[in-house]
Image (cartoon, rainbow, N blue to C red; front, side):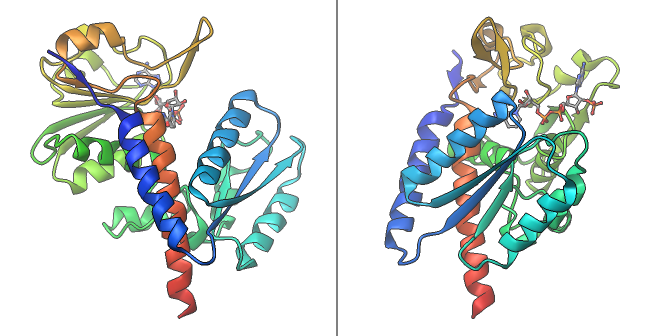
Amino acid sequence: MSQILDGQMISKEIRERIKEEVNRLEVKPKLVVILVGDDDASKIYVRNKIKACENVGIATEDYILPKDTREKELVDLIEKLNKNKEVNGILVQLPLPKHLNEDTIVNTISPNKDVDGLNIINQGKLLNRKPVLVPATPKGIITLLKRYFVEIEGKRVVIVGRSKLVGMPLALLFNHANATVTVCHSYTENLKDITKQADILVSAVGKANFISGDMIKKDAVVVDVGINRQMGHIVGDVNFKEAMEVARLVTPVPKGVGPMTIASLLENVLECYDLQKRDMK
Ligand SMILES: NC(=O)c1ccc[n+]([C@@H]2O[C@H](COP(=O)([O-])OP(=O)(O)OC[C@H]3O[C@@H](n4cnc5c(N)ncnc54)[C@H](OP(=O)(O)O)[C@@H]3O)[C@@H](O)[C@H]2O)c1
């Protein structure tokens, strides 16, 4: 009988712990969120992140910039925020409009304020097994699996998707936990033969019903990262009904990886706060 990996419940536990921690602090941590343009999905993500911060007592400030904002203006704003001691974390909502270079922007954020863990310094630390700020979605996935006592060491993990935000950092985290990791992408041949071998299968593709039941090994653990809009509903990449017939544990969408991402982001704001306090000593 399959069970769900309840990201909503675990996220709530983490957020309550963070709220208590923030309550004990004299000076509250502060996150600045920057959104360039008016993409509807991005606006919702930003709103949810701000709400989640406010619910645990983390202060926020948002900058909503027009979509034709010049790179220099955005870089200047980030540099000003880097210097501002009242700002602990900076998040630039991605994707950015095409004329802005995401690498330039993300690497302008001070590594100690990089709540998304996407700065090249933080990526390097992750590669070198010295991570402090790890991208929120991969971090949340590992936390969720650990909370359900899913064994990772020695297991065969297949990740479909190789983005800098999800697939690649997640592959490193699984590797550090001694799993044998295969990362698949749009050029992968015979995908089903590979996914069928996975003890833990993660899909981060962004296509509804991409993973069908016949691609899943019996009793596997299935993690669905995808967020897709289908007939007015949010669905993942995995055919949930079919997965529940084959797998042992499955993350639902919504209420699976999404809430874990938010909880990990809040943890990262506190990490930034601690890093900066340590720097001042
Ligand atoms: N729940 C959350 O908190 C959360 C957080 C972040 C993202 N997401 C969602 O997760 C999904 C992935 O996000 P992302 O930022 O990683 O997306 P992305 O940058 O678009 O990456 C998608 C990946 O899927 C691969 N892919 C596309 N078609 C494929 C195919 N037919 N076979 C195998 N691989 C294929 C691509 O391969 P190539 O590299 O070869 O192009 C790419 O590596 C999206 O739906 C996004 O909305 C959810």
